Structure formats: structure tokens, C-alpha cells
Image (cartoon, rainbow, N blue to C red; front, side, top):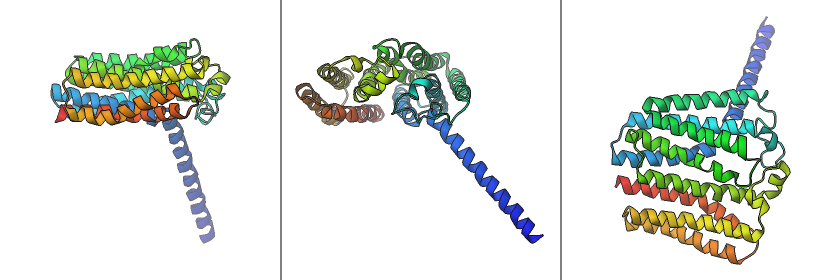
Length: 310
């Protein structure tokens, strides 16, 4: 009897461990297709926008919490939808073939789409509770990213990312309009434009470094069609444009010299590396620019928060 009880207990423990492992793996797979790093970056820009808007209008912590949830769910859902749409081309690229839907970890793949649409609908519903404009911007971000870019133009034109770039900036508008009660001020538009410039710089850098992958998958990214020199000119132009826009931000809104000094250090580094990239062959300096682009965006937005709070 004792042996039977022990065996029965151990069997249940084993089944429980198996269940926990399966649940953990399933959770991890669904979390993966939502692209947490992308969510974190876009939520950071949205949070920056909320704080800037709150200093202009008023702090409403309930709105900030609800808008945060809406943006996070909306971006997660949009990312998961693009994973579903891109499942075939993802399976053909070394960089993406291990993604959960492409590799068959989530099957049938339709489950990933259902998960994605539930997240998107939930995010838009919460945003609509704040105001209709926030909900509209969140929907436009989803439509631009998942449908217009990934679904319709990614495999059709080499200028696809220019069509999809606004999607990265829409969280800023979702957040700002939610706090402001439906208003969009110039500062929000410039933050939106900044991300639109950053997006092709980031994506085209990846396409430049992984051009064979994109060729293999049949994705006509612009850098695939350009020479090394032309790619260097393109990436340098976009990087320098980000720096110039941040300087315009400082000048037009009469921000402090501290803002200029802090953004100036990485900004000067970006300009110098861009010059090296224009003058020297190889991908070394292009890789450095790629690595600097995201931190530079973060520095600019952090300093905007500091300027508007203090």
C-alpha cells in the first residue's frame, strides 16, 4: 500500500512538472511572437510622450496606467500579427527561422493570429475608453504595421519601410492625445517624425548586414539593390538627419543648454562616424551607427522628459 501511494504521488508530481514545463514553454512562445524588446522600446516612447503631455496639461495617473496597458497590448498584438503574416518568409531566413510560428512551436499557426487579434482588440478598447482619437491612432499603428507594411507592401516594393515607418511613431500620438484630451501639439508631431526617421535607419541597417537573407526570402529591401557606397550614403544621411532634428527640437522649443550638451555628445559621435562611413569602405562604421541609433533615440526622449518635468 505504501509503495502504491508513493508511486501514485511520484506519478502526479511528474505529471505536474510536465504540465508546468509545457505551460512555461507555451507562455514563452506566445511572449516571443509579441517581440518584448520592440514592445519595450515603443512603450518607452509612448511613456515619454505621456509625461511630456502631462506637464503641459495635467497628470492623470489613471489615464497613464490605462494608456500604458493599451499601448503595450496594441504593440504586442501588432507584432504577433506580423509574425503570423511573415511565417513563410521567416522560415526561409537564418535570422528568423527559429521564431515560434515559423518553426512550428505554435501550431496551428492560426492560434498565433487569434492571440494577436485579441491583444489588438483589447488595446484599442481600452484606448477608446480614454478617447476616440487615441483608439484611432492605435488602430492606425496596427493597420500600418501589420496590414499595409507586412501584409501588402513588404514583398512588393523596395520602399516598403517608408510605408511602414509611421507605425513606430503612432504610440507617441496614442499617448499624447490620450493625456491632452484629443489635442496633438507640435512637440508630439516632432517626436513622431523623429521615430519615422529612426525606423528606416534601423531596419535598413539590418537589411544591409543581412542582405543575403533578404534576397533568399524574396524581400525587396532597398539596401539589397544598392551598392556599398550608396548604402553608406543612405545610412549616414538618416543618422545625421536624426541629429539635426534633435538640434532643431532644442532650438525651436528653447530647451536648456544641458539638453544640447547631453544629446550633443552622442550626436557628434554619430556625425563623425557618418563621415568615416562615407569615406571608408566596409561595414565596420555602419555597424557602429546601427548600435548608436537606438541609444541616441533613448537619450533624446529621456532629456525631453527631464526638460518638461524640471
